[in-house]
Length: 176
Image (cartoon, rainbow, N blue to C red; front, side, top):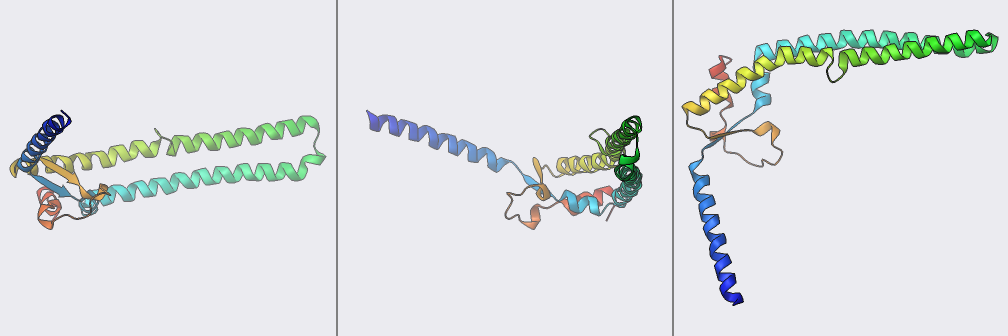
């Protein structure tokens, strides 16, 4: 009885494997290197430069405000023994308020929904959409079923260069 069940299950597994490989052979796969594509698009590089400049400017603002908080704290530490209880309390509140302002400014510029995120969305997303549309068009023209990003796939060990359509995507975008 066990032999019959074993043979029965073996046949089912073999049939499933056969069907799976038959379907896999019908799919055509291509790869792109999104990092390579984006680095070769002038508009992407310009957007990145603009984001870097904004980030540096905003970071300078944050650093300046942090420096103000440090100065307030340092001054308080040196003058603390000469201050009345009311003055100490007032200075402590000023320091806490300044530190809260620093945190709020950081959140405003660099938080999850901050200005840098919004600016990145506004500048980079249209470029990415354009690349994705070009990939879709190219895949449709060449009857490619699956396009994978090889720069984002750490499990990819080897790929034939014939499967890489990155340069064709750049041509479609008019970049090469």
